[in-house]
Length: 388
Figure (cartoon, rainbow, N blue to C red):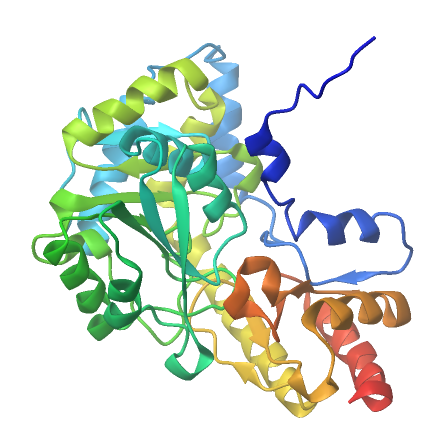
């Protein structure tokens, strides 16, 4: 007879994903318009798929190098140099990972000793604080405000620094708010990192999805390349979520530590996915331009729609999420989402799932069809007539 729990205390204490709970509810219901999932509604472009298919037809179905194929690492190196003027050695400074999720975990595990603190700017992706804890660190949340356009400020970071602080984790363009850092705020973050000798982990998975704006690569700032771990990948801009290809770029000593963890955890990222990623980076610019144009149009549709319903919407400059305030309803964000789902069959995610500073907002993805966005807005108009 088992008389004790075999689940570790750290896992027992970990909060379940605030997103997953809503997806589980939606799965039990009919006729739901879901604006909850953060995934492109485009199919991977045909020529990119063919790159993966051709790889399999050539018999490339085994492991690759732990670091990823040299062809893909070279393609990543050329990609970031062309876009941002950054130079990374494909041999020693680039690692192909199973998405940014793996990249984030091994980056944190490589740098943290038990009890080390990481400043996590929020609202942020639900996995960020959990990844710090899984790596043995302590996540110290740094709140941002809509009044500051959800920008991380140097003053807010400084207020949370202790002798145990080792790194700052940022995610811009931001999930869930759509915020994009201005140069002023990037410089503030860089100044804090330099003054306190901190590393910066920069999740830039939405780097290509920006509107009326230009993404600034954090590592491109003077003096920041040597203290920055950059994480990005193929999922969002190239509609390649299921291919599971990400990459990490960092100075060689840091990358070597990450590679050590990667080789034991993963061995190598999917081989055919890496071949598809090479095709995407070398020939996918027209696809990116088309999808960004579509997202931009849908962005305007959903933001204007929320504003017209009396749900003031923060202006997203990147990613594919709208983040309206639901204060006019007098409900908490969780109450709003649950009531909306059960009464009108529309699924959005409570802002508080992404951190305390997301409370009072909801996240709605516009990586969806015009028809679904319009249907959701029509149902929400009826909801607001009853609750607004």
